[in-house]
Image (cartoon, rainbow, N blue to C red; front, side, top):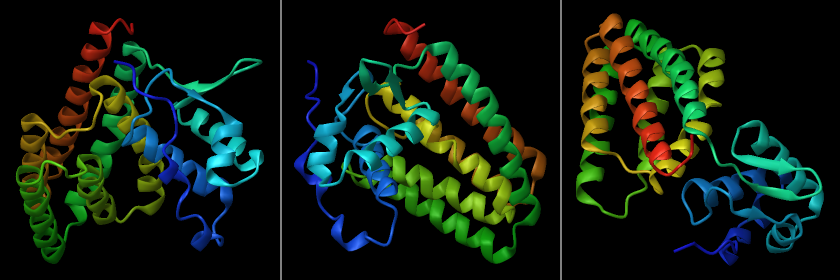
Length: 234
């Protein structure tokens, strides 16, 4: 059954206390939240006037947000038609994860090479907490847990410019996974990959970390692409 394309009323709450941020940043965050964690899905229209009204902003920051999300591959802006959430093709998803896996593998390798004893213990604790949260709570936001784990690795890499480049791709990765599966869930395969990656980093095994990260993300891309092909998105 097709989900409603109405933006939830809650989308507009919480803007007043953040006026120090650019309004387009706030709009971008709200829209991404609804797309990556909410009801909006591939092909659903985004009506600029409706979003502006619900967020109590002018149309300009909404358009700026949509243009930014178009650059991220999440939104399609069709001239004289309007805006809609993108429908990624399976080949596009596979190509993206090939590139993404290579970049993240190098960030992971840097983390393994530069990991201190304290950081290794902290990563082990975080991994234990993440896996415990996944097993113990059905309502947990798996996407944010995934970000927390990989974000910790980015910090351990101690290469902020490199990590920033890679971090910019996580929204697109999450969007592809959400589109393929309908929701972001951490499967047993992914949990096993976390364990291999964490173990390799704590052991400061650069080659094993690079391989584990690359295999994990390539597998994610292949599984997502397979689901999209089954749904007719070639």
